Image (cartoon, rainbow, N blue to C red; front, side, top):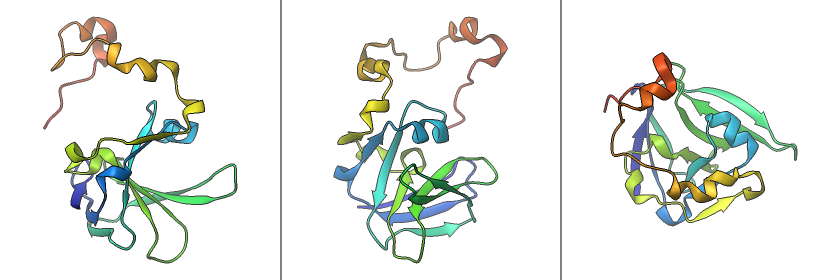
Length: 152
């Protein structure tokens, strides 16, 4: 499937081909630290199809416990994570960040990895109260630091 995406501010745009059946949730502690969340949802681009259309991401090279290095790219303006890829020459696999892909409604995860690092509450996330928008009660929990409504 042809996909396209962008960072939050729109400085970086890209396109690729991806198979929705290959979408993965990673629960490893590196993904937790790099996203600031409990896990990361990753969409692997088909080999040789990833192409930057605009912008130049900033990169960070992460070395895993195994010694494997991965280049992580993010927008230098808004900080949105864009992708991770191996070192070396193209074509190489690109792992795209779910939240940057415009067609993300087609990419339901089909596998979870590193579940030994998964937080127990993630298994029961469906039982946590949900709201279609942001309830006023959120301000009593966070005060002035309450999350604000999305701009889009």
